[in-house]
Image 1 (cartoon, rainbow, N blue to C red):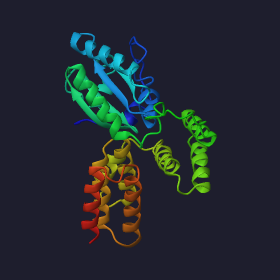
Image 2 (image 1 turned 90 degrees about the horizontal axis):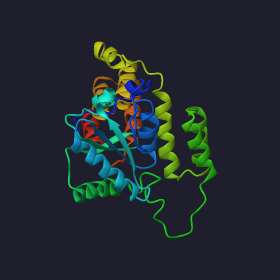
Image 3 (image 1 turned 180 degrees about the vertical axis):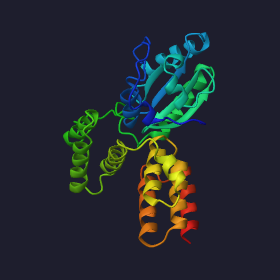
Length: 284
């Protein structure tokens, strides 16, 4: 979609009007109900208006489908006019707008009312796209006896929910140390390390880097901020530019940081594939 979820802008939520419904989300609980929840299952975010009967009908349809979803996805309904910063962050061009968020990033979207069959197919495609990548997808579909949750992951997730990033990192690192091939723990560790790193980013990091393109540290900080603001292509391009213009240890530092950002995505993600090609051209 044309916009991006600006996490830094929503980090300190403003007080918004109450929106009725079990799936209602405002700026006050956006991070918990959408961003954090989307690390477990995709969250379908529906932005609607009380002045648009059509958008309210779509919300009711999504609420019905959420109840039939078996826990493979979650729903967040957001009244756009009462939560303008969220609407602006998503780059909303029309009402209703529906965006699927997975692992904190927009995955797919559509605007306007759609027939129930098409909405059902769209949600199924979203769930299929993240199956095997998010731990909560398909968790209730198994016919075999439920396996108890790994207490190590539970401890890590609880620490993350409390905002205790160091504790969450330590918990995931302990799993990776004990099980070097545990892909779920490795992916979670990378995500939490990134989230921890960006908590205190300077909101002016991008402007500072643009003002002094030769400053490698400023470029790295700016790339992290762009990634935090759901602008991965801009972050990749900024670091690839540093790889082009630097040499020696500086080039190694820029390349290493870029590769760390790549690891936040599926390797087959088109934007990562394209960026890797650009990196190869910059290196050789």
